[in-house]
Image (cartoon, rainbow, N blue to C red; front, side, top):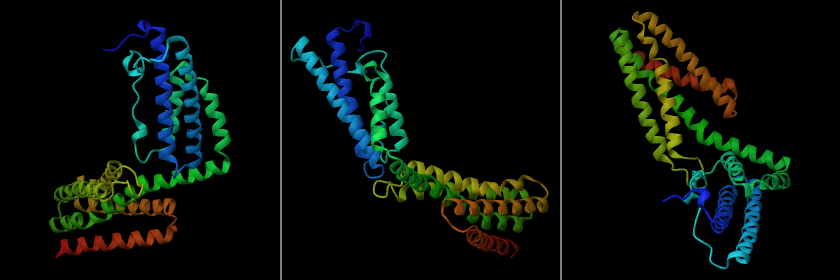
Length: 295
């Protein structure tokens, strides 16, 4: 049963403050441990904050002993109405550096006893997070974003935009009907999206490679795969078959251009080289569908 803050005794309030210092210190320790390999300077900052929490905890314990004796009541913030319940973000692996910093800011503002730590945190950040350290950590952050979001999304977009061309245009040229081509393209896009989502999610749980949550990567890959296929399927809602086909080809060209740009932007691939590789692959798949559908 939760107690109201106004009903707490001075002894209980001090016990909660001690427990809060202990908990926050351990959370900062978790942040430091999780970020030590990828963000050493930020990890050092959190280690300093953990040490500050330990100092404050020991000071409060000494105060408690002088006033109330050795026994400290077992009462925590979650036992009292009005305290915010924290999401255990410190258990997430890999832990995002921005998430950790944001959580630290929230923690420092939650309790009056902790408000003065904002200045301490700023001093520690200035001490450990030099310009070069911040630059190195920003590069590491971009690398993680590339591995966890861009790369799975690009793989899905390429698969959806290219692999669905053959069944879509085979059905289009075989039936000469927009409606049938649309159904085949829709099925191929959704099916490929589901397949790619499971393939990406099950191929790597991220624990060894640091590529992040398999749910995130699988979701991004699946959605982008479906989007890539749906893009050139939608034109076949146009009843006129020849007009629908022409629009679909234009959409395919736009999709391949987007893929080439993303590869150039994030993979450091020369744009012309990326465009040539993507266009050749797309053209081969398109010709496969056209030849099979026209046979």
